[in-house]
Image (cartoon, rainbow, N blue to C red; front, top):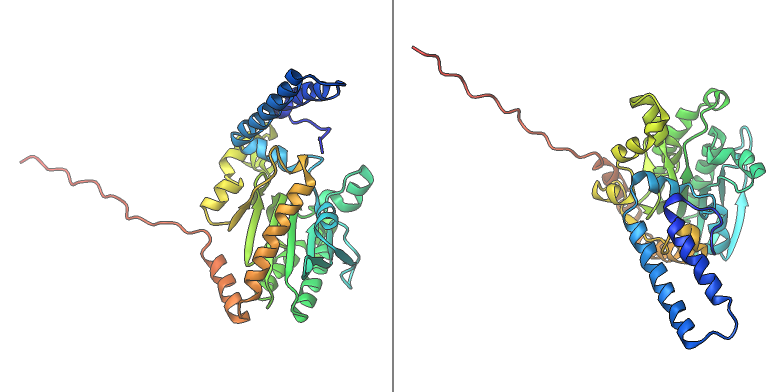
Length: 331
């Protein structure tokens, strides 16, 4: 699919694609024209690769937020042979920012949990732009506990700028609910795979981010804070968001180096927003591979590996301070 929304650094690609479209629309093309079309396709592929290989952290944020990037509902339609949505937290309501349900991936039955931002303005308002309330995290945990009871693996798709920051969410225990999810997910006796498919912002992402395998799509980001929030705190103005993005080192490549994530899932040439089906096929192959590997592990070993995985995060090296050489005192 050809996206309608253009990021600034994508314009040269769109210009060439417009030229290609005009050439392909000509009737009875000559041999020379067919050669030109082939050459232009090669050039477009080369240009996409060149541009996306050198985008910086701030451009990665723009790709992760692309309006046409596939969201959880898109992946449900493209990945799952069957999906039965489960609603409610048995306490307050049904948070539309967090979707949960039983799904069939190939021959594998799973519980799927994912954050949904919405496409239209109406959907975004219903989903709070992907920012879940405490009832959303309670709903997710209730369904995950049920999945563990019936020995079903769990797949979490993360795509949120952060948990909802409103007064109502705080009054209903936002921080406590996320912390509870972290504790309980670390002890669930079933395989868990968490994948950042777009934005992975703050505690909103962590609330469903504990897993035996944690991965990111190539042009997603995963961060303790949004670049705008970081810029507001450190530089006192949102205009420094690009500087904050570079400082946070939250791209997939940086986080793989730091072992915060286990794997990078490559996106189609030009980003996931250009080919939803190809991205879904790649994600499905990734999930099935790891689900098969994790399902063969004894439960005690699975939990111990999960525990050790998160205990090792934040490794640093200590060195003794170098003492200055004593100064000789003249006689």
